[in-house]
Image (tube, rainbow, N blue to C red):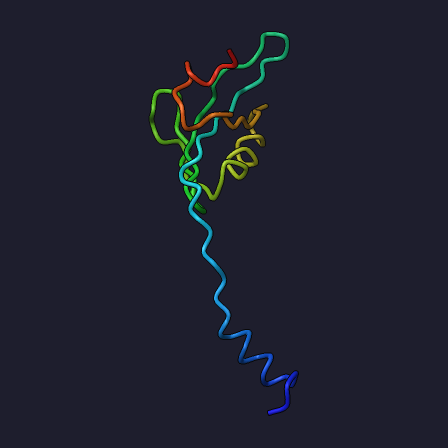
Length: 100
């Protein structure tokens, strides 16, 4: 088979293995409901793991399952004025993630 032929390119492509990226682990998010001049309050919080997300009420009761935090925002923004928030430091407790 001549070098550079289509058949050789196909067999080479089939033999290539894409490196697996490390799983980033669970990502926590919050949906804050805006109340105009009165500020915001926690409407729901969730955990995104891979291609799935679970959304919970503030008291911990399950509210929904979806594909991502963004999908949760899209779903609930239809009925509420909510903002999607991702914590900055998910590997530390909240009291340690504040700028000092």
